[in-house]
Length: 229
Ligand SMILES: O=C(O)/C=C/C(=O)CC(=O)C(=O)O
Ligand SMILES: [Mg+2]
Image 1 (tube, helix red, strand yellow):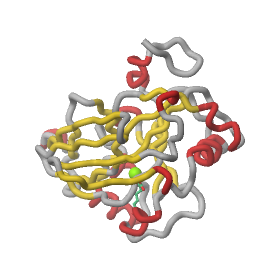
Image 2 (cartoon, rainbow, N blue to C red):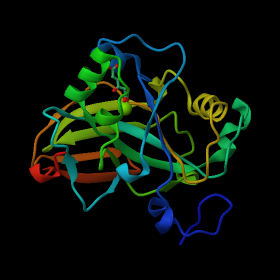
Image 3 (cartoon, rainbow, N blue to C red):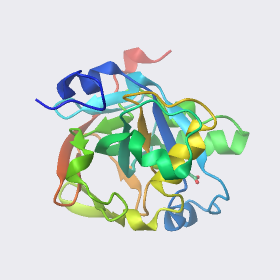
């Protein structure tokens, strides 16, 4: 079994660590456009709680307050070594590997948050909002800016994007984030969604992947009404 970064923790334990999830928004111009937003001049950041992780085998659960649950397929970057105010040219030394991630979004809630000028926590941070694939060690991906990421719903292609289209590159993002707060071993950075986001319904099957590298499948379920506040 492999290990991540300089630690001797086995990889299979990685997702159990429950580390920070840092998300980048509007990092693909065409997705910003489809949302009616301008491409950002600096990275737009938000966080998900570590309890948002969901792995294959468990469903993605639509929260009781959501009527429009959207998929966003994204390349995840796994931090292998703590990073504090790192320069761009040293940033990639802090990467352990990658994952295919879904930034599941309660879009109707996000629209309301945007209208009211509120944070996006309810829209982006609910339990199971961060679906992840197996960890892919960096040695398997010579250039993370030359990857095709894709997503199908019930067998129909919905998103196809190329990581070369990111506005802010991975070293830029690591450097930028690490100047705001320290990144820690095991943290995950979601690098933003390409265009084509859309709704999923209960019992839909989402399949997504990094072409020729890794893929995942998730079913969509509904949160039980008794969980309502
Ligand atoms: O611009 C908007 O209204 C919404 C953007 C997002 O949801 C940001 C992302 O999560 C993304 O670009 O991946
Ligand atoms: Mg996103």
